Image (cartoon, rainbow, N blue to C red; front, top):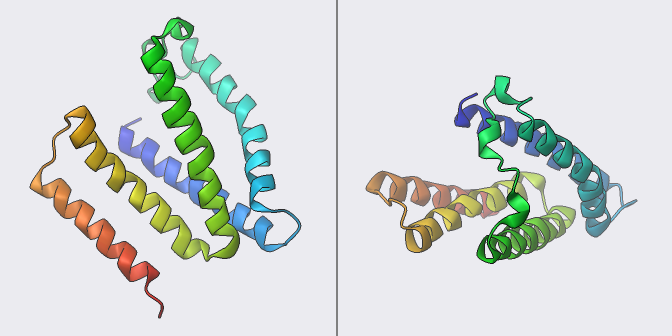
Length: 158
């Protein structure tokens, strides 16, 4: 599958998931931290099963190459581990999702979700330019400005 198809599917499933989470939070029967704990608990074995399938080549028919999943990942450098632990685990996996669910618990999903998920690529694109040396074109700048403009429109009260 093309990367864009994976991105579309990610957006679809995140949208469905956040609608379900908002509905559960709105019930008042669970709070945002409970929702995150359940989400992580349910997702973890599924993610490890997907990793196992990817490393065995079982996902190659849908475009996930086993070569992209090194089997010696436990021997990765300490710099790689710190990036995974602090960046992916603490920042995105814990803090990002915690603040998102706190916003979702008290705000409209139609405002909170687009803001969180539009600012993430904006920060990532600027950070990738500054820290990773990725290209930053006029087209990319225009796209980011349109994203920020869309956030302003979405967050301005009617």
